[in-house]
Image (cartoon, rainbow over all chains, first blue to last red):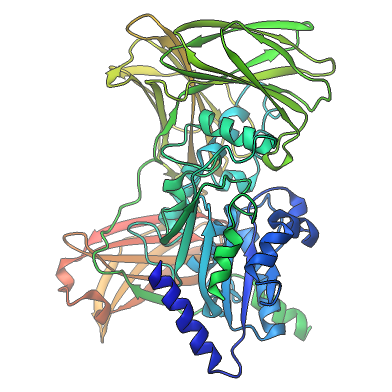
Length: 274
Length: 349
């Protein structure tokens, strides 16, 4: 996308003229377990090569956000905002590129959409250049619907591990919940006010990346069972990922691989911003 | 003390934040909040196989004309592999072993039949010892037999009736005569007895309730189950889902008023507040052709009782539209607890 490349070059030129300007990159992971609040677990979520590639060999200052992956977006947003705020103030970062995966894209949308909800949000928003959002369930995920569908069985409770526990972050990501939040609390979808910063989305459209991993088999099965319309990456449909922002590119990497720099070199693409 | 006060002020919802206003991008159409979420479209169903003995069997209906995916999931993680036998030709098997990223623990088994003919397939399951049972999820991803479901209203205020809606189709043909049930699960996880839906038109099944079975605010989930036969006699089963947000009744918005004050359109409304807390007064302004023009949001901390809300939208953001041609969508949103407290629309006279 030439427009995006030109913008990145313009940013680089602009920042190069300022003694004070300092660019950094923030990674916001998706939903998962409560242990994603541990920095080491959050780092492993992305994989070392994704972080290395995106930061050009760790030369760009970076922050790996770590939040409890079972919580609603406003709870996660508070944890993420605290980390970003402290990091940018401590390191005088005033130009932030945000990289998100999956539910992380919804968490940053919460922050961008609700600048008056928390006094740390607006200073963060002011410093964000743009957001690169990988496989965000902007209109929800049919796979997340399954958790609710199946938990209503008479053996309630013993199936809810299927697509992540039937917890708050999974409930946040159902297509019904996202329809509700998009109408009242989140910006950027059709008919709603625009987000204050541009979101570039990257949708996953592949399933069978690596036959030896259970995750690939699981995602392909989920795709078939959950009834995702159109293309999807096993967890998030393309239509949902592309419901907000500008399409940057699509990737054949599935939901397991599109947060890593392995099956497709997505980190190398993200690094072109710097 | 000074530090604590600073932290308190910086972390609380920004009750003292300045009001925000803005313009919609040119060409944006006003969109009214949908009465219900987009329909959940299902080509799958699930069955529970309780542990009555070491071996159990279950019949799986298939409408045909599609591949068949059968996913067998033990009720609790088990190191012992599931042993299953599906009475169908050309079954491919995949073991799903501890894919923790997907929340899968223990060993699941997935079976895939490339082209399943219409009929009933027998699945034999050897339930591992120490496991309460096995859930079997079956999908026909390319099937023409589709169950579409939703619950309404998506944002449900106390006292509003609840509608559960299901629609069965075989391609373009409605599927009549099916048995369709629904089961509600409250936000606290409590599940209620299933209720039957009545066919109100060909292939359309509904149930309406004056109230929810429990006064519980939050997301109510609905599981729909349908069974029947197609026009050609093929058996089918489908499981779908729906969801609605039961609001708390935290506050009520009164009649909205709009007037020009200086260089702004002042929009005000009284509120009757039942639950004190932080709220956001949201306004969207459109013209009479429903072109979205401007928006505004004002955070307010409201105490219980009567409150007066207002926000000023700069006239400069209204694209020169005469005030008497404006349409307003005014909302009061909870911030301490997320939820819609009230919504009022009006045409400015």
